Image (tube, rainbow, N blue to C red; front, side):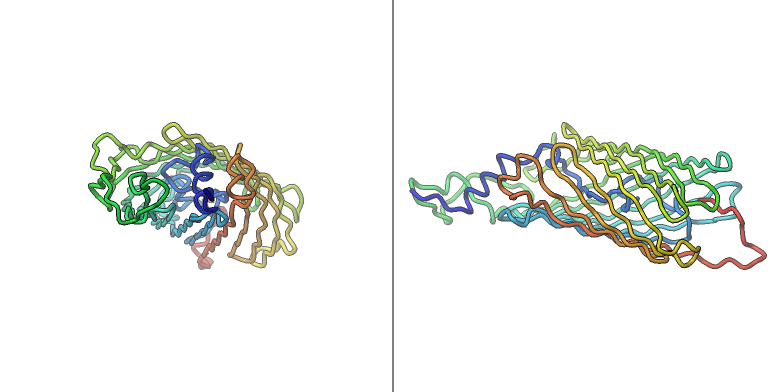
Length: 339
């Protein structure tokens, strides 16, 4: 009997899916440019007044059902200059994710708040929290089950005993994190080291009505470094280790950024990066920074056993970030602003 190619691809997807990609949260290769998804403490933790961030990721277009993820966030400072050596930050994040034959969808809306305290001339310590509403939906009518195979034939009208108590569920989760920040005055050198726990309350998330299927706690630990090694050159290093339930993910990236124009207010820079998701993918990337804008493009080259289904084609990811800075009047200008 000739087996359809599409069926073979479905089997390959199930057989070779990397374990850590089974985690229930969305993830990005350019994780450093989605700060509210990385750590709630990063809300407002940047030089400037308002920040807009967005990311789009499409992966595994070579398999029957590609995955799509989108995230957009906004954060800003509050009471900057009014608190003694400290600043409040607030933000909001929207995430959307679609995956699989059953059209599994997640729509998330989160609100963030943080406080960062200056410890010394160059060191800052921040803490923050996030509340998140998560709506999950599935379309079971798009699935097929063993009961619909009658001998050598498939009957899509055959009844099935699989019962979905809910095709849409709502979750509420709480998250928190801390971040230690180092930055030299009037210099591009900066380092962030932090940790965050997402879904600390582990809300129930079963479509089948079970009360013992929690949305597992996710823990992020990371280090981000941008080091000025020359008036026109920066070295980049980023690493993220995540755990969620039994799953683990390690992503590390190195790269460089060259400034065609390094004059304040006239910045123009080009960056190249190379990253790796441990036992899964190689991630080359390129970025362009122009004034307050930064645009990055990366591509996952699949190296895991899942390449049987993907032919090494993981997928592209695009990130965009814009930071708005108000021009301060001379009498209120702070020569050494926080961040």
